Image (cartoon, rainbow, N blue to C red; front, side):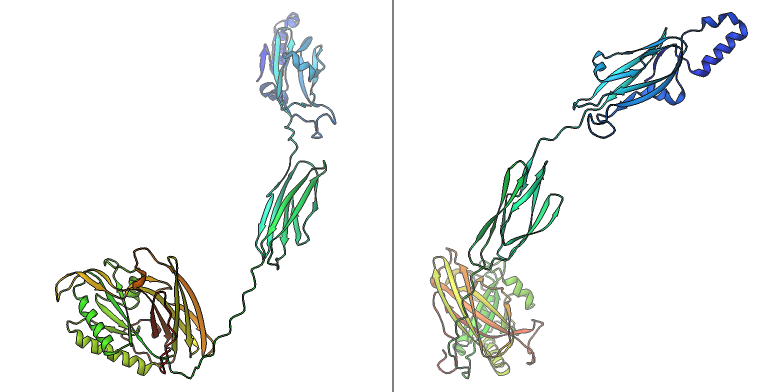
Length: 495
């Protein structure tokens, strides 16, 4: 900021001199002491001078101090005073005093090696007139402490290898000392090193170290570990000899959509029981309870949508035919028998099912062998059901039951309830599958049953169905008590 007493600029000074001369030539000696500044230097007295900490070379104390020259005019003798006495060690003005006339003053600051900024004020006095400007100098940038580290310090890799990065932080020079032979350095960008590890073909884990060292003799390791390769799979067991000329025994599947609150549902249950009696060992049943039933099954809603079920009870035979309810179970049983006969007449059975199961604690292990005579697209569904569940059942015919015996109640879908898809390229092949399912404590193991049914794509075969149920029908099914096994059923001896 411009600080002054009796300070006038050049033009004002000249005017005073001229006016005084016009009035009386003898008053020239009475002109007051004056300091004037050309316009281009007035800003220095308003804002001051700012110096950086370093000299022009950018390094402290290499090329010398930093300077700034300013100009002013004095009408008589003048002198300077640096108000901060400590500033004399780093701040000088040259010349520091002089006589009247134009003055070119050089303000010089020595490089500031300290991180702290410093400042001082310079006052120019000419008799009673004076003006002051500030001088400020930045502190030197902090010198960072020495650092040498790497990140990460360890890397874990999968057996198939791959790339990874190691970042080095070092304020000095460094170099990579060593690395494992199975590791290659791909690139270095700045201080980021990119490496690639080859695949580990051995089943054993391998380890190595990448070492970085600085010029001070300090070395830092980055540990590398890589998993071993997966053990080679055991060779496929040879399939047992099987007489593919045998005719597969066929069983139809009846899906009954039901609920404990459904008073009409017992009519259809009776119809299924009669149909099983009329067609011995020809019909497997699975009862799918609604989500709000006391025996709700999670997969019911999905199948409900798939088969376009409009209400309870409704039956689906072999994934093709819909059976609506009737209060005449005998008549409905006859219709079920007709649907079974239609499946066998229209769709020659192309699959047989072998099931093995045993308990391991609370887990049921299930092995399924599918004997497939035809190539093409298939689905397999595995469901766990339970018998002899005693509980409530609404009944509009006999009145509600409190101790109704529910059988073949779907409990858990071991596969996707709509079936796991697969494709076979060959005829007369065996597809072996393995599953496991946890058995909750509230399920009675002795009452559990494993139901497996195989769906086949219609392909070029005729499509006989009641609705848009998809491109599959149930080709065959089999069931066995949990913990037991059953062989694939053929017509001669039936397995």
